[in-house]
Image 1: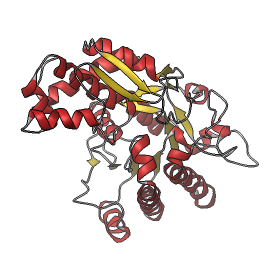
Image 2: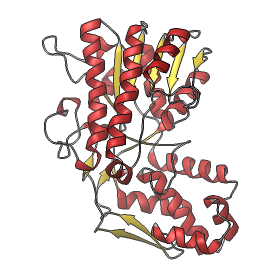
Image 3: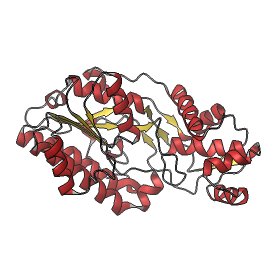
Image 4: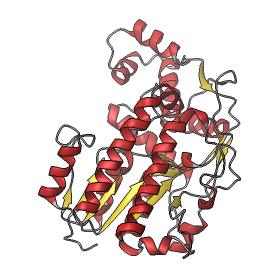
Length: 352
């Protein structure tokens, strides 16, 4: 990519998209195109076609997606498969029609089988059944990988697919019902700390509520009190986490330095060309919660409700392919959690 290349970042307000835009700016890229959902509905085929016709981007980062945690994935199954398929079909196809030089499709490591050998290598894709709770989302992302591969093989496009592990960082979703585990734990434990200290105004400001009685009832429904925080599952599942700004750095490194032909070795059957992006290190949910509890300074109890689903027991990426391509993560988990907590409370106007 040239510094003046026209670069479209789809999903620029999201966790990864915002980090990509920030990273591009820091590297001196000056011609970045973004559109809010109100300005461009990526599910509208005609609107997407008109956008590509008018703007003619040279490079595309496809970071737009409908995302959520285990509850959202299992509850809104139809929405997760339909919306993600529609968004990626529109953007990938129009990128082909309008001769985009390179596209990067961002997926998720939930594409791998529920009982996948650990750590998860790229070639384990489609070798056994998926985790049930997020199967629709995973199938949509697998379709995106195969769409990029197929367009590359048939049309000679240069579309790269990357599969990040669990991401966290600035601009994450902290919604108590729909967020992923790490931001949900930060917010729950932070609010429990406020409850334990009777910081009523800070609680109301955080929840954007006016009645402390209603606020306490609302938080109690999520298992949050001043004495303890309920966490779904046994706490035993192992998870890997990558700082979102590291993810952005990896994406831009690959777009600047690698092409589709660099992502596979076989010349007979080209498949599994996607690239895992992660740290290659994992931690149990219980240990993660304890680490967050210590950083925030909450002295109450962490209660693990084993009657709730755990999801996949272990999900660790094999990042040897990524390392061979020349990139390695920089931010370790403790430092990332600390930065994310400070970012969250700064957004709320509160102090730690």
